[in-house]
Amino acid sequence: MSWLDLGLLFDPRFDILPPRISSICRGFVRVTSLSGKQLVRIPIRMNGKLAYLIGVIIGDGYLSKPARRKSHGGGYYWRVVITGPRNYLIGLRRLFFEIFGLHGELVKDRRKMNTWQLRFANKILHRFLRRVIGLPQGRKTTHGSWSRFVIVKDFPVHFIAGMLHSDGYVGKHYIGIVQKRFRFLERLKKFANQRLKVHFRGPVVNRRNNGKTLAWIISIYNKRDRDSLIRRIARLGVYAVKSANR
Image (tube, rainbow, N blue to C red; front, top):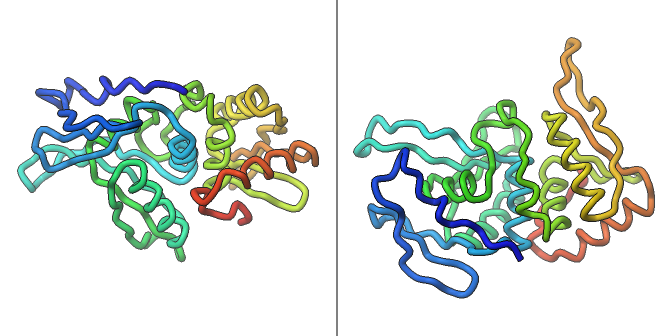
């Protein structure tokens, strides 16, 4: 099981002193911000539920870039945002609370019908996902290739499940994962082959508008590989909260 480098929670660009560890428990530490207002439960090792959440955030979420506050004493905004149907986000909110001890805010997304946002305004959570886990900042259109697959290598089924439950499709004859990043899907395809022995095809164009490629897809059409992956994901338990049929 992979240990996580929690020393990366300290960022000298924004912090005078590192966050304080208020207590150490089995499998996690409680980290307090310098202001004493934020208490976050942080895992010290990678685990299946965290690997699943990483897949979900890559698929349906993003980490905002730090933005200066114009009120409330200055400082910065640190946001983690996930979009999706309300019932799906309620399940994810429970999972976030189980892992980090944080209650996210559910907000209606005015840009899309039947879509909500689960928001966390927490610097320690943002710092953990950005610096310790290695997720990129910004919306998916600005992301480059995510190169930290090694951090979830011991939990490949959980990670792929998170990707499928956010940016995936499970049809009668195939499984597909859609992304705007071609290179990311190439790396994901290789990761699934090496760690799970399932073989995705692609990436190929999934959506195009006025000659511009909007999204790419990798797919599994082989029945044995498809059924094997579905069975493994089905065994994960209750935190696989969203049907991948879309």
